[in-house]
Image 1 (cartoon, rainbow, N blue to C red):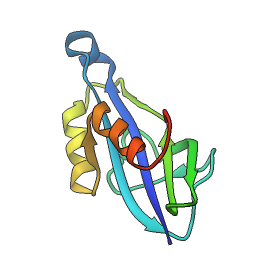
Image 2: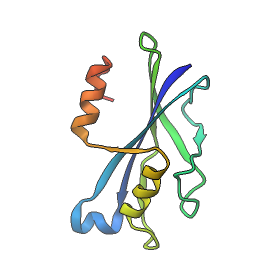
Image 3: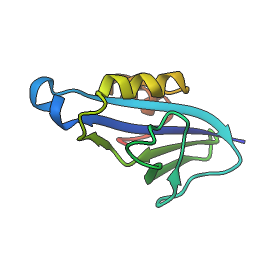
Length: 116
């Protein structure tokens, strides 16, 4: 089993103009299947009204720690039917966590990774 860390940057075009809102969310789990660039991942936290999954855009492996960092395609909410906070709450209910850029930087440093 390998520790898999999924990451998504979520922002809202409408709210960005006013508040520059953007969040990084992470979900960690263990799996025998390692995502590769180009894979489309689905998760119960993803709102079906916006997409059917996220594309894997980058994978960084740390074989010494048996850990994998997976960057998923950023999501920009352009539709007004859902606010970014509502979308993020749905992700949280399904095991995702909001992290700051500083927390993310510390996670990478702890795992011997350079800029991700």
